[in-house]
Image 1 (cartoon, rainbow, N blue to C red):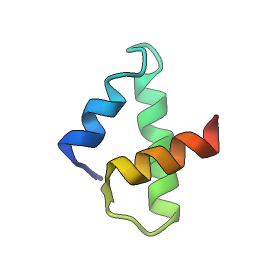
Image 2: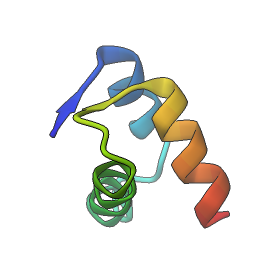
Image 3: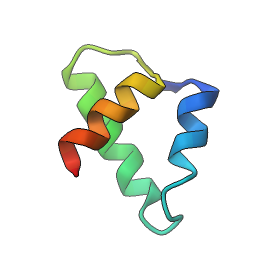
Image 4: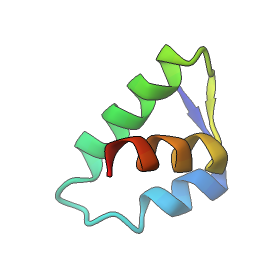
Length: 51
């Protein structure tokens, strides 16, 4: 799964110890929506779903 640099920057705002799990959840969310690239928009949609 490819990430835009902007989305990667957003991911880095998440504490490092939960970042790998967050990345997996966001990628799974994107995959289920048929996305191939994680953009800031996809990141925010996933974050809204999981918060």
